[in-house]
Length: 118
Image 1 (cartoon, helix red, strand yellow):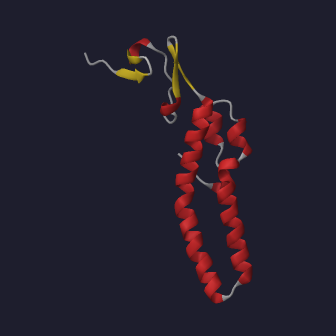
Image 2: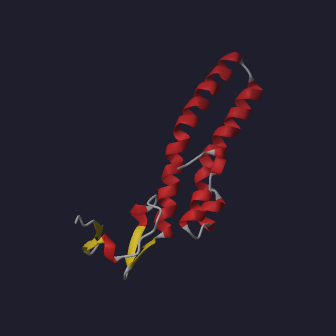
Image 3: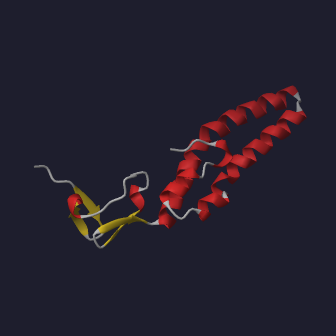
């Protein structure tokens, strides 16, 4: 029989001896509390913000290219529109839903700026 172990700050524990979350998305925020592994929501929020940063990078890169095209064409309205879209993406990590989330499931529902984060 193969045993699975979970690394904790106190060493390794047998995974079969603890109750662990079904969702492993925030595994790096897991905390061992007796026989139960819980999610440290402060750490989970930082993990989620990092995922937002990663998800918005290619979108920002595309908007940068579009902005340059609008700049070359002298299209001030389009430049302004793109600048506003970029600002929304920059502000995505400050979305109030992230801080308001009390569970990992609620945190996953925070999809700011139309990003699809998984």
